[in-house]
Length: 303
View 1: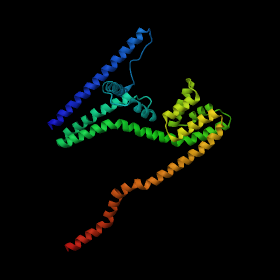
View 2 (view 1 turned 90 degrees about the vertical axis):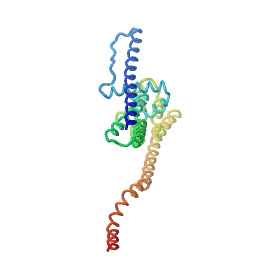
View 3 (view 1 turned 180 degrees about the vertical axis):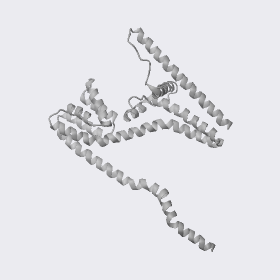
View 4 (view 1 turned 135 degrees about the vertical axis):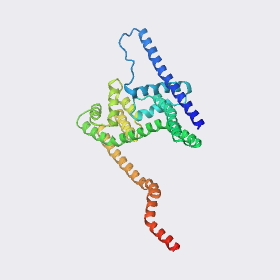
């Protein structure tokens, strides 16, 4: 019990020190930046506040802790985390903020577990085992949540691509250009696909060409349907092939691909249901069916 209390005090002290350093470092960086801006002659008002509310405070603390960890330890791959955050649609979350939440999780979950273990009076061995599990959950929790969100978002985009192709076929054959068709589709389509289309349109307004915006879309959303769409548009633009015919063929291909994916998931269903069937359903059935027979046999032997 004394060892558990000492470990809890150590984690609490480290957490308080990191949070205090993060807050002070963020404020010092803000003051330094404003001083540099003042040297350049900028006289407008600058808002020192970050995001409003408690969530904004946690985001600032996490960003500061992530910056400290990256600059001093170099334990993270920022490029990989940045790609995962973009695929998840978390454009306002920086990789260092995610790293800061990982560090907070490593410190916070074990501290909560120690508080619970001390209150419940569990054994030292079980407390140490729970401490390791809590630290692992706190470390892997944020990145696992981002990966799950990214996978769900990419699947939703891939699923909505045939509807986008159908809309582009109607508008292109109705007389609109590809850029105008994409802009109209971005206003009509909701969800992650509509968000990515609006980002591509905004990039074109900021000076990128249509092909560059589409290639950036493929980089942000590396799904088979988006890759096929971007490749077809690039080839049609460079070779001068009719966009309408390309889109019709692409729509047919994507619907076949979505049907094949649905059949694949249907074929995986028996394998996925095997575990709950064997370990949850069959035991209950055996108890209900064989229970009376076993009781009758025991009564017969006892009699």
